[in-house]
Image (cartoon, rainbow over all chains, first blue to last red; front, side, top):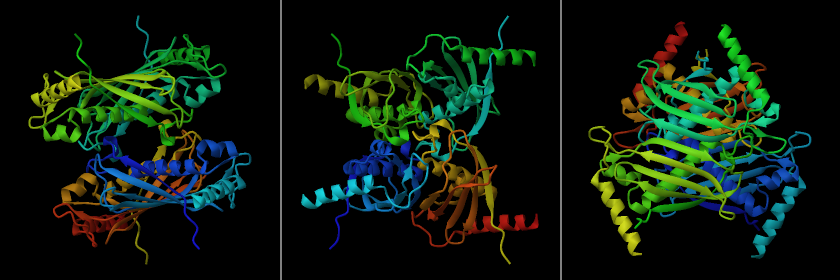
Length: 145
Length: 145
Length: 145
Length: 145
């Protein structure tokens, strides 16, 4: 039995201020696209940045990796999908950016976030119950639907 | 008799991520250059962002205008000078961006900031004494030197 | 008789990477929002950046002014409307950013663009026919509908 | 015998527009710091972006990874060192960001770039001689000095 993985997708278009002198999206700007998709995913879990802060914990990014496969040109549409790969010890999210038409892949990426207790400033090696419960509730909802 | 105007200069180079598909600095990125020069100016007055916040007031930008005269290309050096034009009621700063060699002007700009009292959230029509005194002290120092 | 003014609207949400340490959108990031609305407006006229370049002319920004009325907080939705105010000699566009609910105004802005002939590099004091015709055609369509 | 590794360092300060609502540098902005250090390194080799393009090849980023160890706060100074780890088949550069005082490490990162022949659009599995020779010449200079 495989558990369903939670994911969210956003459809975006590259902006003029995102492209560089080679007329393709500058590699650093993909991090913004990833953040939009991550926020959409965390929203569906009911655990967006505001809800995180209210919970007494924050989840800073501790590592990130990106693989650039095909360039995205100016004014090109793309879909970025963020998938929750891990949540019990840390939040690990995988990303793929694809062409909505050809389904060709532009980019694959991953981020890891670790919980920090705002009251102590300490990093946690196990996710606090507020996150774990939110994810489990969402997974159950998805499995029913 | 004319009062000396306080100013500060920073020397910068356009970065690859600053230029657009036309290989010139994207017009929105000048705002970052202006902020660097403004911070340098406020530093010399002893009134940088941290010192502002500690004073119980903040000075958000309430208006900004820019005039683009000549484009800045990738990897091009330029000097941006920020000059304090007004401080008694609001902070008005003028900017010029020039070519260090030819002295040709790339850009002229201006920002206006108004004090907000952090304890009430109200905007002030007159600058609080902490700012006025800091500027006056700095002007006196400059006039002596 | 008043001519109908062409406009376009985009609905956006402030992103985490757009806000600063005061938890409001950093003033320089409004320029990106303006560009999104301007591109939407130019798209409706059939004169987007690609169509500009294909026409043999480009329209760099020659001046810009912004007035900040109310801050936009993280994750806040807003509408930005770009209105074509002038096109016969230069492209002048006005912008308003408003709260979709209360209709309160966050920001008012304006940009001016002048045509540059790509073959000579010269700025033009009168808009080339390709732009004027595109705008007139669009205005006629709008007046009929 | 170990070969000397080529490196370059730049000393930077985090800007107000680089920090987020948590008052630390937003994780995506480190990519800009890495680019500044990479450009400094490529400059010392005599192979900056302009020289690349003139050579008939470009080297887009094909992968990137970052590890965030300690946050960088607003107005904090840091040194970023870029070290050339590989160049014969691809350009692999390692980065460390450290505190100039305590030498504590803020961040470790790596980028990989592959040559693309501008005349064919093809990626190359072996670096073109123009790059290899430039690096070898620079290494020899360094070994003499």
